Length: 111
Image (cartoon, one colour):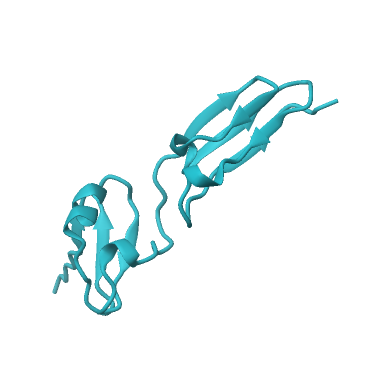
């Protein structure tokens, strides 16, 4: 006997627009980001935290100057900083929301 499980799925924009409340233990999958949330029966989609699982493809933002200010588009990306001199990185808190992640890597030693 073959068993097939199918989870609720839609794009991130549609999930946010519709903002449903998932049943306790129900999984909602974003087809365009590969992220998912697990319902608790009382919290609407936009207030649920993402569960750990497959991550979307990582985007890169290579910076070679001596200063860089993070931008909203850097959320979920890897920002690389490469310069032989000192590098100033500015994090403007008003640009980001709680739970967003930005990976930062310095790939050239500063002197």
